[in-house]
Length: 512
Image (cartoon, rainbow, N blue to C red; front, side):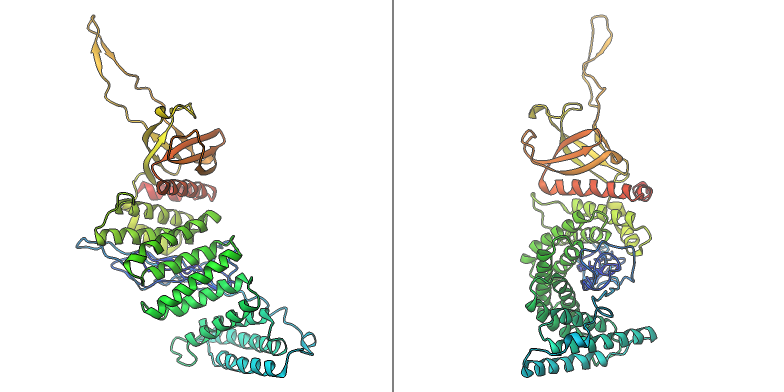
């Protein structure tokens, strides 16, 4: 799946269509991310799309409801071993919007720039570089009247940044903003244009970002948007060695952006999308490790912003692709989730994304493909080790592994009434040897305050889960840490859907 946020977030090229690629940080995000970094996917029948990545948007900016057009990636999708391969999920790509800092405002006045202390040689060198970039920007013609008008504004901005750099070649703000102008101009190139090419403009933008970050190594916006520009160049090169090198460079720049600005769900989402794209090119031996890293980035993005539907959807698509790979290769690892578990987990995230954004066609199409993979009429079911009702910290021997299910209303323990032994008294009356009136653990979604992993030493060995509610704490133990991640995400997503008043949408999904 590829990701372009509704601006765009990167999506990988797995079965489910991934979200679109990220857009530069200064650019406005359609949804919370930047340009998507889509990975091409060949979709048999319908494919789930990946959510877009936002370009040029501040990676810290919360995702908005703005939506842009979604374009499927052509990433190759894994096929199942069945004669009728499962449909692949498409990546969801959105148009990216640039919000260029100081594009039209805060230009440095000529008076402030006068009297440059730099040598004539450095000024001349900068002038030559400016001329080459200026020629590229000036030769772009928009595809329509709106594009032409937009390009005139970009040319004007480029001239101002060129003038600022001739007077101060170390003005990293001017370099950064000029890179954004070049990146925006690349999006404005007419589809049938051969000169200048989109790639030429993006390559020049990358040079400006490189210069800006060399002068200011903490400019996280530049690393973020630079990664988006590199991703756009990689997508033009398909599944080639050159594309692999570009995707690797993009992931490194996203990593740097996150190191400098950890509180950015958009950057994490785009990083995950770039990793998805890279996983489609590398060898099978490297692929699984890269995919697992992508999953961790999407999950980290969601935990920074619980309603980040793009990252939620992209996580669903990467799990779907992982399931498809498992079916295709026929390999099973007892320590790993089975393909059926992966399909079911994928469906949970896609259903949650649809519940949060019910009018988004990409999610609606994807849900049709995976809805039957849910444990209907529930969103999630599985096993957790639980204490007796009313006794939070009993001896470990009293904890029992029992079935639980989660829907839009509650997390509910399933108590199965066992067949009781009966005996006849001397008088001939039947006496029940056991008590069938057992109580079950039930946690109502509106009562939840927080959910988290727990390392409480009083719990039985395993992956501890703590649900903090208005009535107190509920402790459970998952079968594995991987299983715990699934329960934590599902509980947070259901609560977020409730908090966003979309419970009726979720109820409709699991009732069908």
